[in-house]
Structures are given as structure tokens and as C-alpha cells.
Length: 321
Ligand code: AVJ
Image 1 (cartoon, rainbow, N blue to C red):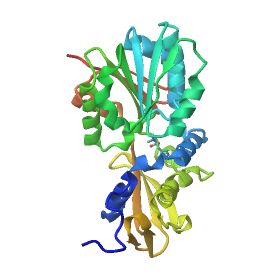
Image 2 (image 1 turned 180 degrees about the horizontal axis):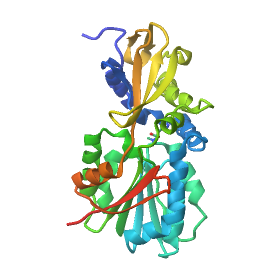
Image 3 (image 1 turned 135 degrees about the horizontal axis):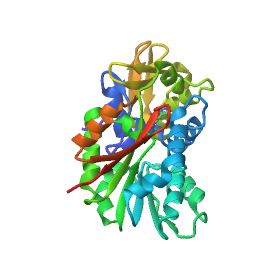
Image 4 (image 1 turned 45 degrees about the horizontal axis):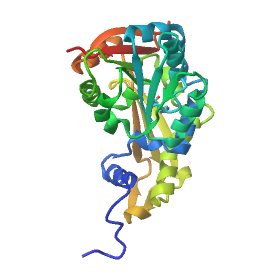
């Protein structure tokens, strides 16, 4: 028997994840839900904030060492980027590669169509022998298809996206990437490093409130796509450094006791005053943790590059036999 007010039997993928996350104790939502068109745009704004050092630091590493990085990867490279976003930093590596080989194939994979469009527009017409083949997909689902791509592959997983995974998930993910590749292929992973708590805190609590807006966009998106009735003013952005677990945590804290209806789920969710939804972990790394992580994933840590402050690290792992 189905009640009249029961939700659609087949839920949209986001409704399914929202149901799971908001039914859990404590409540949580997966960070990949941040990245609809509005969220991807807000993230691009974050990368330009004075407090948000990771993007410009990683870019500086690419600018200083891009030639060395692509040379280290080997000849006849095909570039694949997992979670490419607008691929603005990757352009530096592509330019470095174009000085070494005539043809460059670039396969950016991302869930956001808007971000990929930006990636393609930013690159097209720029280099005569560059072929960009964007793929709209959840990159963790497209790994099995990577082996079909031509040439020696360099898989980019930059921007410290890996920091969103739990430690054991990061090992599982990099192991899957390794198994989708062939011996001689390489992986380039960007890691945000442990640093002073004040710098970390500021990077996720910016003065202009863009990170708060980015965090709240997850609720705005549920409103737009799943008939949610979240009042964005009734939740506060909370971000702090958890030293024991070596991660920044982001939460949305209910400012009052409230019930929030989500139409597509046909139900309400209860929030106590001060109750939080955990929306993101952003793990920070040490060189010791990085080498252990690559080793546990079956990758050979061939070389790594850091900025002079050692705020960010780009590591190359090789698939050996
Ligand atoms: C895209 C996961 C690397 O953790 O710094 C930025 C996302 N969250 N500000 C990060 C993010 C809040 C970002 N990553």
C-alpha cells in the first residue's frame, strides 16, 4: 500500500543522498553536492580569496616546476584530470607539455557541465594541436574507462580534492586509479599540507563570507532540486581545524529548533537548536602521510614538488608492474 503523500518511488540521485545524510546521526551531506553551477562558481570565487592560499600555491608550484613535472612523467603523454573544474591550473601543465610534444590530448572529467564549459573555452584556440575531450561524469565512476584512452597516461588529481576522502577511502580510491592504468602511467596528486591553525582557519572563514555562501549553497541546491524548504538564514556556517584528525571540518549549524520539509522526500527533518549538518572534511597532510598513502595504494612515489613555505605538495606516483 502506498500512502497519497508518499514521495516518488524513484528518487533523484541527489534526493537519495539527502535522505541518507539527513537521516543519519549526526546529520551529514556529501561535499560533492556543493558543485552545481552556482556552487562551482562560488568555488571559483573562493580560489581567488586572499585567505584561500591552496589554489594560488599549487599554481605557483606548476609555474615554477611545470616543465620538470611533465618531463618526469615521460614521453607521449595523454592528460586526464579527475574533478577538473575550470582546469585553470592545468593549463600551465598543458603549455609545458606542448613544448615537448606536438599533440596533446586532454580529458577533463567533472560533474559540473558549467565548469567543463569554462575549461573548454579557456583552452580552445589556445594551442593549435591540443585536443580537449570533456567528459561530464562523476570521476569515481569513470575510472574503468580510462584504459581505453591512448598513449601514456598522466592522471591529474590536483587541488587537494583527495582531502575530501577519509584516509582509508583515499587509499581505496588511489588503488582504483592504479588498477585502471597500465605500468608506466603516472598519477599526479595535489595535497594541502598541515600548517599553522590560524592560516588554516582563515582559509575556511574568509572575511567576505564566500565560503559561508558556498557551504550554504548545499541547502539552496536541495531547495532548488528536491523541493527543500531550508531557510538559509536559519543556518550558520561553521568551519574549524580539528588537530587530532588533521582536518578542517565544515558544518551548517541550525540557529533554532526547527522542522524542515523536503517535498521530494515527502517528509520533514527535525533540527535541535545548535544541531549541525557535517558538510565537508578537508584533510591536511604531512610528507610522511603522503608517502605512506601512495605506498599503501600500490604507487611508487617518484618525486614531489613543494612551494618554499611547504604549504602545498604535488606528488607523482608511478604505476609499476
Ligand atoms: C576543493 C576540496 C580542495 O577542501 O579546500 C574550499 C573545497 N571547501 N573551501 C578544500 C573547499 C571550502 C576545497 N577542495
